[in-house]
Length: 135
Image 1 (cartoon, rainbow, N blue to C red):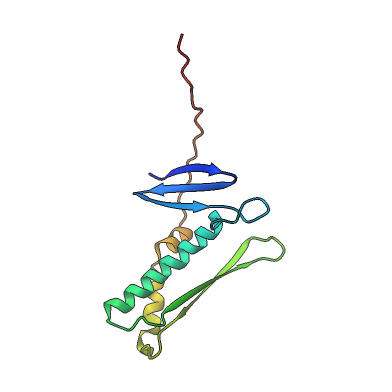
Image 2 (tube, helix red, strand yellow; image 1 turned 60 degrees about the vertical axis):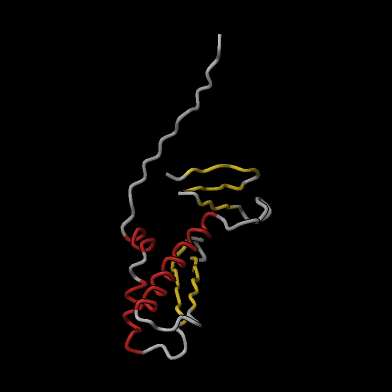
């Protein structure tokens, strides 16, 4: 279970399995001390795809020096909503051409991307904390 805390300002932190992530909002609303939750969401897609690309190379003993991935969110200028997520993998020098489609398929296994393609249902419950009063 994730535990979310509010350390001050508009920062929101999440803890899970002994690890934590801090988020903040850009100025002027926040202090821009960390990625915003939406930026963190995009980073999770990029790092997930990067993991699959890295493991693909490692499992085949292919060089990983120079392996890099970029993610570019493209927003609709009218609605400001995210329209496209462009991902580019920079393969290392000498990367075998025969593996181009295979590494692409490997990156397609990204679990974060798959959740977007088949989204879960959200169940939201609001509970009011009851403070006990001693008599």
